[in-house]
Image (tube, rainbow, N blue to C red; front, side, top):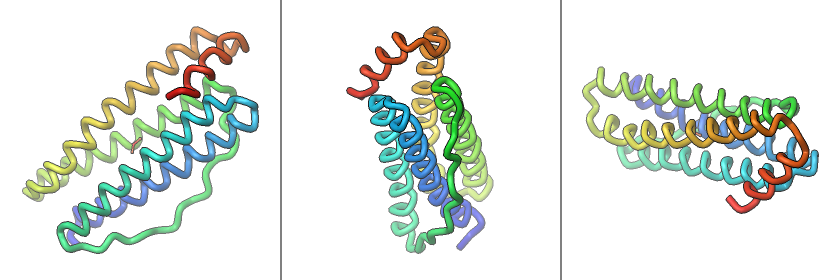
Length: 159
Ligand code: FEO
């Protein structure tokens, strides 16, 4: 595999790791009785698996075989609810940084098909970061008050 395709395979694994982290967050908030928040994180985990699948489909489409790596055990305690969503936002920023690096590498290697494929992820990350930023803004106003938390939990149950 070329350096770029190796890095794409690495990101394929990182997207699966992201799903794993969001499932852990879903468990964490579910255990605290917030089934709407849990629904949000479970859906987020599913999206990450879709992101992963797009990378493996791409690798197959250029006749490369994706490889699964070992996934580290995720954190199991994320602090209060605002901190939990902040941890997810920080994770998304890390994903964005990695996608940007991949994109730069594809440009350096003049790999136009990879650059085109990666454009989708660049746009997707804008959406992902925006989702978490908006939720954190709401959570900061709620300031961990149960009344506000239950309203938001209800809303995220219908996401
Ligand atoms: Fe696959 Fe949330 O980035």
